[in-house]
Image (tube, rainbow, N blue to C red):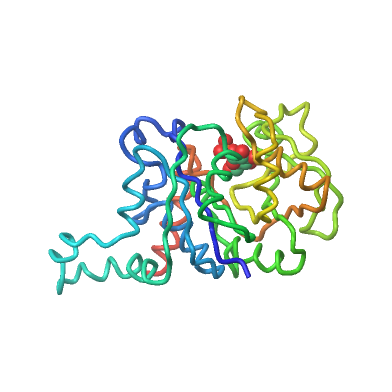
Length: 275
Ligand code: G1P
């Protein structure tokens, strides 16, 4: 059973400056809800209720969001506004929240390794909250947990991206097992279009088996001088098995202004349809 979901949230969010100068990018709201809350909701829907954050300086708002705000709650007690906190209160009551800090920004691999003390020795999910995902019938993480129960190995979510965008992603290659499943044989972090083995990009949803920690420890810094989870996963794929999964649903890159606006429009359409 997978119970833990790790959220690496220490990054500076430089693609969204100046909005993220004093505010964590994960707190930027799509409609009336912070990005990170969508991610935690997706984890809970998949049955993952032990929420682990690898956080950093300037990210206190995330801890406060997943806690009680006594003054505010006292202020709106008994008014119609209390209802607006139902969702987050419900989430908080179902989950446990653990935090550890990444001291130096040395890449996603390093951030995940920093989470080892709170994740422990069991398989876990990783959510990059700025990739906002909406499943069709089930959330993307719920789809991946189901696959994990079948394959018992690390799983990465992928989607096809235009060739000229591959350099923003980890890109995979492999042997097709079915329409949506590929057994990974190659993986490159942020390749140029010429170097890219395909246009199948990893998006910010992973399920990782705990042997990944020792592998990351022995992974040299790669692209941009950072320890890359992509490089560690390639080793895992070569020594064992990693599955790439073309998920069902939509994903928005909310780390970019255009992706963020698209996500907002998509959610607003759904919001209007609900009435
Ligand atoms: C990270 C990963 C990359 C992945 C991407 C998904 O990159 O390193 O492999 O494709 O997330 O969003 P980042 O966007 O943090 O630079």
